[in-house]
Image (cartoon, rainbow, N blue to C red):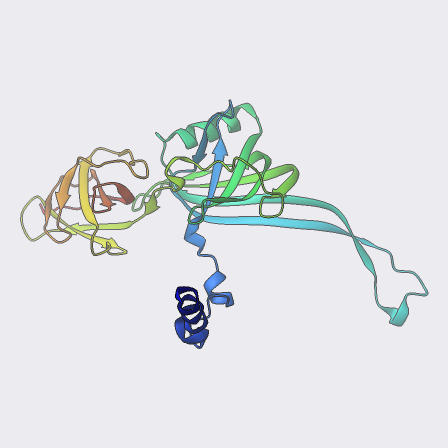
Length: 269
């Protein structure tokens, strides 16, 4: 009897998928924010998500070899695929005290290859892996915004598709995420020596804000780090000195860092 009831529930679950089709393309689509670039340290003992990352592009291409001849049908050119290559473009907030950026800087200075892994931080599964050299690693420091980096990795040999060539163990970086970026704006407050702060995007309902002020550059927290700075309600003016930096940190309900952003303070004289 129980088995018959269970089969009936299966048959009519979600109104027999009349409108909630979990096999649809939309249900299987990936969110870009979940895809992270990670690198192994020099000893291969530790996998680190690159801190501060925002954009990620995986480039794959192949040379084309023309094999057209006079008797090619219809006068159309004919080609076959030649040698393949891959590269990765990555950019985001520059976090100079983070171990991942220290590894990148050392590898760039020494001309050493790095072992990379692209992961799906939501499903905790590897997507791609391979050996690459750093060919571009500029750091941009505008006077009115956060310091950012961009990174170009050129592949050495094959980019392994880990969804096809599955591996075990499928190592994930600690936290499996990197700190996300907040846009922070500082303007004169209503009271003397105060600044009014605006943050985009606005924090989640259960999340919290913290802040710290000081001379540049302020150190970014690691993803998941428990924050002990001063709490902020998201609207109150903050006492600060013009020209210093202010960092707003968004955390989860337990005070663990999720996002951060920096602005140069503008306070009322």
